Image 1 (spheres, rainbow, N blue to C red):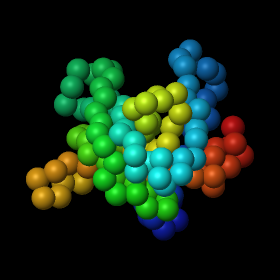
Image 2 (cartoon, rainbow, N blue to C red):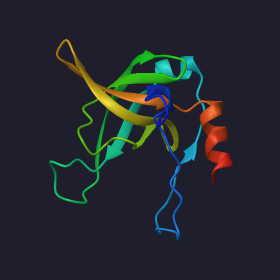
Image 3 (spheres, rainbow, N blue to C red):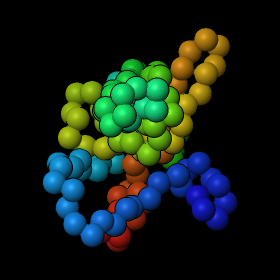
Length: 126
């Protein structure tokens, strides 16, 4: 992302000096057919809400590509970089929210798809 601004690389690993004392998600590379059948949630701290308050939005799959996917949702500023999880199993991240889109009267969340390459990247950097 930092070299080319390419949407499919819009993710990072953040190293902390100490544990923040909160839980964590696992990561899982889902098949295209599983993603097409899923509905998703994403979580964030929108700037138009009470400071520090966690919010959730989500909806069904819309468009699945090799390295990205879109789903019906309304993620506003403050959701970017947040986890995207399947609604039927919220313990694993299947995407990383990169942005949103408004097309033909519909809002969509745009996510970088967790692939085996993304899982390998995370493992190399933790």
